[in-house]
Image (cartoon, rainbow, N blue to C red; front, side):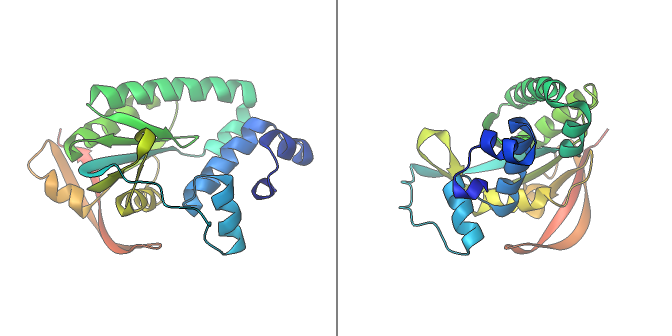
Length: 220
């Protein structure tokens, strides 16, 4: 329906749901399908790639990316209603952004019920993930996180892209409530920092292939 050009408000009216609920479901669908726009969604559902010119790349840089996601967000939104959910999301966004900035990172974009953030080092991303988890627990919000490090393509307007972003997003799908899951690249580059890593062995990430993943936790 949305892929056909229907607005969130129109879709909500047809399905007897609020626009905010439609937005929550749409954000999750975008992330799972690896698309960013309604046009890309339509092409993905039709089984054909979008006929768009590639955006110019401003540069490539080595960086760490952090994905976070509220666990059970859809059920929570339905249970408490649109007004309370909107207020809770606002508090979530504020707490998350503050934790990212204190660790020296920046929020690249909101995913609806989480964020994509960039950092200069994996250890900074790890510190941020721990701080976000701690801050959101005070709000009674369960969050899961995933971190990967690699070359990031910098796009106009501050956006980013690259295979590393997809690896991080797929890694997030392996995390449960309260877990911080990282790739072997993170474990290797953050070795010797104040974190301990427990291997999950290799996991076949959809569209990526086998990648060794680790649970990460502060050393004390």
